[in-house]
Length: 193
View: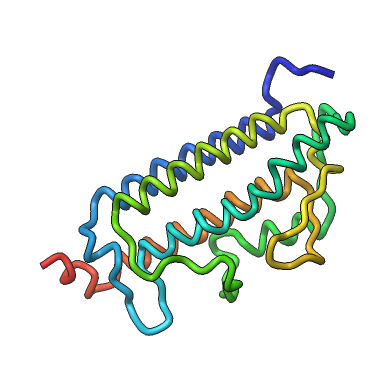
């Protein structure tokens, strides 16, 4: 079952990815390196840590998603959609999105680097986003609901590939909003001196 056109669901993910990528580029380009690494308080992340965390988390997840997509294709686990995901998948995506309200403790395997350079953060995030876009495109034609991937941090969490794409984008919106809150702190502008 060869598809010539990208599924609307995957097109939506690519559109969201491009929007988030542009926003992150703008954030990083418009602050100093000192501001990038400035923390508003003990135990709170800097803008650089927010972005680096997205790169670390997404890369670890892609290490599982990419082979799952290849295997689904090789065994003929194909479908055209549209796909409707179960309650656990939908709940997980909602939990990670911006405005979910509740802080979520980060697993140690997803910890960001404590100090970052603008170049490292920007390049790492861009490379991760290119890889994620390639994975989204390569998932076209597989059964996005029946192809499952286990969380790198929580082995009991086994979600559909389509839900993982949505969760990754929700997670990025959440931490982009967190980075913007850091930038609105009154002391943030003072760090540029």
